[in-house]
Image 1 (spheres, rainbow, N blue to C red):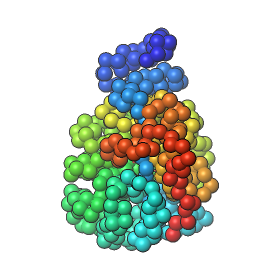
Image 2 (cartoon, rainbow, N blue to C red):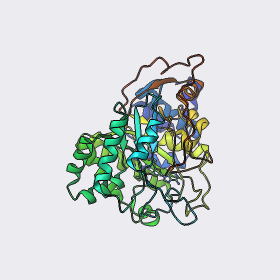
Image 3 (cartoon, helix red, strand yellow):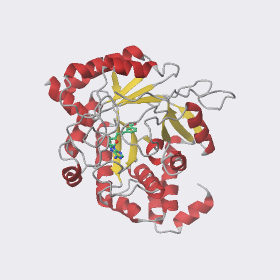
Image 4 (cartoon, rainbow, N blue to C red):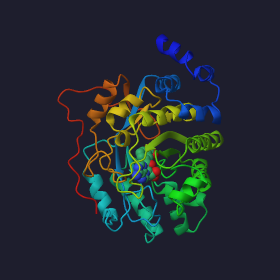
Length: 389
Ligand code: V47
């Protein structure tokens, strides 16, 4: 670390944490609370950057991916969510397998490596729908890895299948599922669960389902939704629960802090998170989750400039091209929330990091344009999408 910054941290309130980080000692619950209470963002970021560079050097990972949100019909009614169909809100839609095929055909010119597929809990879709969905994606894009279904979707799928979770996961895997995203964790405490999303799985169920996936060979990510009603202590409890689960299974790949966007939700009175809080969430995630290989600064939620800065505050990943994102509409007014691969490379270079294209398991992909800006290259921009439905 730059000597001026080292001296700054060593002379500040977090000097003891500098020693702990340098010695690779695990941070405690109390350390986590102190970090959230501290407003010394420079010191917190510098500490997180030590861990980040020890684990991932100067690399910033990105992926050529496409998100598909196959239905917005949902029976959970979570107060923090604006995605599900409701009166005076989004109109209901459910994609047929043909609709999904068409969406994937539109991006055929892009060498996608990841299809990220999540949705609401539609009470009437049968088990066969989920298997057909996976088979359709695999048949249309055989080279792409399918990262699909949050823990709450898995619990619904298991209910429909009426079989043990292990068996269901293996069946989904046999039909094309490669890994699971990190969504739906929100804040893993009963108080936040009972207040904001009482109809969804509990913290214990979320963790148990993720760990079951790990045990059958399906890696997952983990998220944390912050900036709503949660307390500082609850954020730390969330991180420690993830860390303990990771100690047992080693199946988490990436931690993604998700900045709460209140627009269109039942919590519209809550202001958007600030860039400072977004950077703090990333940095404290990096510091507490010493056993997670990667931390993602999801550009779509925290904006591209903050995601670039986050690469110096603990993040080593920026997500990917996305194409369409229906869950929140913070940045753009329409559903087209995409960055070309070229733009991602440009952003990473501009941030002073080394762009590394990856697949969802962090295997490095080397293409002519993976690390550099080729002249006169479009970077696989995608035509504007048609409305979902
Ligand atoms: O599960 C819902 C969250 C998640 C809001 O695994 C909201 O690589 C903010 O999990 N404001 C879906 N967030 C997105 C997600 C994700 C995104 C990018 C990468 C990965 C990955 C996973 O979005 C939901 C929920 O936790 N969410 N509503 C909201 N108003």
